[in-house]
Image 1: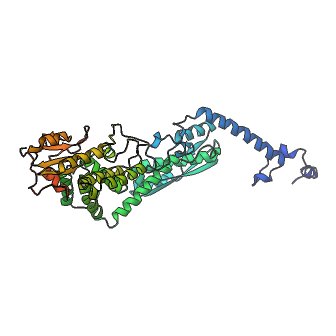
Image 2 (image 1 turned 180 degrees about the vertical axis):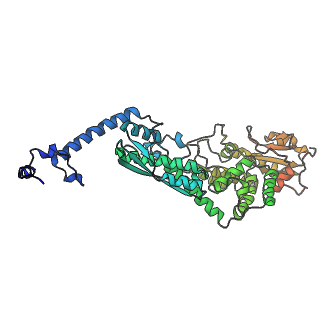
Image 3 (image 1 turned 30 degrees about the vertical axis):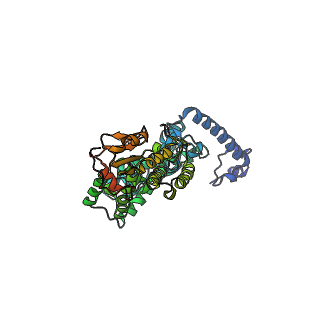
Length: 444
């Protein structure tokens, strides 16, 4: 029991009670004004000190850094990109989060981690992992928490790696919340980008697995055989396949029936480009190394008008070269403004090739056909040898035929090849007479 004196003392207000007693309030705004202001000033000074320490102690590229967030379809430079608009705000990495927590004297714990570890040990099928991180002060109180998620497919089914990556994301998230650093650092952007790419891959795989009808071993053999017979660059064919399928197919064995038919029929068009290089394609269309797609389109239209067959004897063959050049530059999305070829481009070559074919068209018994960026002669050429040489044709010992081409012609065809095989590739090649097809090795 309290005495009367004690009761009076308890009911007597204490002077400066706001500063003498610890005040506990559910809402900071309910605190006495002086206490509230002191708290704001103290935190302001502490935060300024923290930010100064972060600037001095954290290392760019190791503890934090900017991440290239633009997709590869729009920018293939990746981390070497020079456009600052393609990068995120600085992202806090795990080493930086560990430094901040160590400086503040707090520790981390993952209350949900044991359950995932137990599930992994029992063989439970885990598709996604969500880890919660708690930051604890010296007295054991939780001062901040964060969450990190990770799809197991991102790590090719490696659950241990997925757990560690989820822990890292949760730790970074909790650190940002504890120190109020969201205005300085973003969330773990690096992990977000990887997760987004993994989700895209997973969706693509899901689509492919639905109703997927792969090609047979025989179809694969037919495809490889045709590539070899046409003398095509296998790497170029594969590159086109990856690009045209938007990375859905990276190997011939992955093809489904629909895209297999598209690719198989496309081989004939590739053959029409023959051993043509980008430099030769630019030369045929009268372009320079600095041409872009708009200039290529304009040059193609002009070439179609200039070399049209109704006013040009060599027009039928010349248009094969023009079409092949345009197709090659279009498929490679050539842009000389950003990355021109290093070889010298002869902008007059299209006219020279056209004139060279027109010169020999009137020669009796001489057959003319275009292969890639070159004009080849067959038939009875011996009696016209001097005229053919004067027109700029040179004898090719390997093919045993006369050829007109650029001096720096680059051969992509590495297989056995002869004029009869080339003739089978091009339908409607210009022939002056009806003599039997030329045979490689025929004496001139």
